[in-house]
Amino acid sequence: MDPTDRPLQHTPLHAAHVAAGARMVPFAGYDMPVQYPLGVLGEHLWTREQAGLFDVSHMGQAFVIGPDWETTACAIEALVPADILNLKPGYQRYSQLLDENGGILDDLMVTRSNYQGCEGWAYLVVNAACKETDFPHIAARLPAGVTLKRADDLALLALQGPAAVAVLEKLVPGIGDLGFMQFRALKVDGAHYHITRCGYTGEDGFEICVAAKDVVALWERLLGDERVKPIGLGARDSLRLEAGLCLYGHDIDTGTSPIEAGLNWSIQKRRREEGGFPGASRIQRELRDGAGRLRVGIRPEGRQPAREGADIMADGRKVGTVTSGGFGPSVNGPVAMGYVERGFASEGQKLTLMVRGKELAATVAALPFTPHRYARTKS
Image 1 (cartoon, one colour):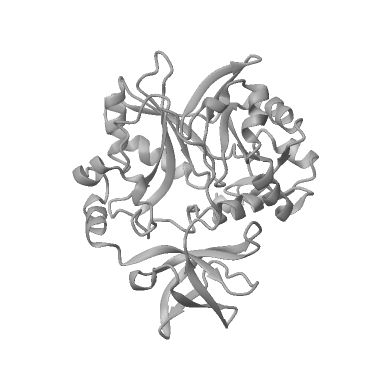
Image 2 (spheres, rainbow, N blue to C red):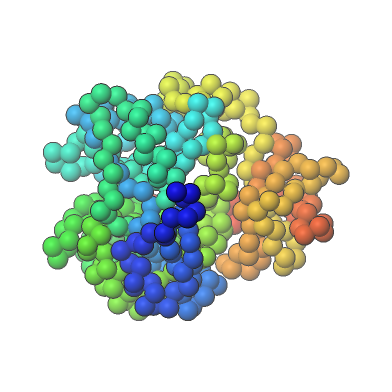
């Protein structure tokens, strides 16, 4: 059967979204809420000012399980460029699943377990649109004694915004002590929660992994706080774009390397020096000599946004392409990201965007467009 002909899947919260008046759209094989009655603009600003609640249960969750952490970490390091071996128990790290040419098959989060008896476990979260290829890819490349276990019985929520800590403290006292990219496992009213302080909006917040059977009760409990509103995919996209965060399949894919994408920070010193991951020779070369093109922030002049696929012109010729673009509610104007030749990537560089056959003046701008407000990491 053609994947496009398959019935759309539902997350465990599908009925709750419909009941809340969400407009549902197909996304990564799921019927997902793109917006609620508040609307994309309202949802975006509410998340920046209060707390937004996102259903991200469509994401792929799995465990890589080995006899000890060193074995598990080395198995994962053969697939990604991040330093997984030195990840502390209870910490999470962002990385990319790479192909042999250093292209990005997907980006993902890797968490080192601190559960007693599960010292050799890593928890993975991958993109929904890629999980059906990611998991077989990973499983086929794990050494003997290390296995991948899908966790399709788990749901995932994201609570984001400046009020997120106060909201979650009511349910989980002391959760505000958790540092950025740290996680805590706990039990509340009989339900097991795996809470990580991270997110995809640029705001402080949390992602909460919980059994699918318990997620409706958690969703309703969080929405019972007047500071929390449900947020759809529309505002999720505008929030991450303002935060300068990549969307797989748009800003990063197999045609881009982590260095071109400006993700150098996600490759720690040991891995840069030692290599040992797919495409290492290319990535080490680009780290040393620079990539031929770079992802940049773009501020179009006026009010018209430039969308994905728009040509980027300079010196009378095409020098790049827009990969994400739209209106930034928090900056009250259009924002975009794209790739340009390295010689045109400096902040303040003047560009011309081709939008619907017309020229639109623009300037290379620093990323993010709105300051990140992540929590400081606790030691």
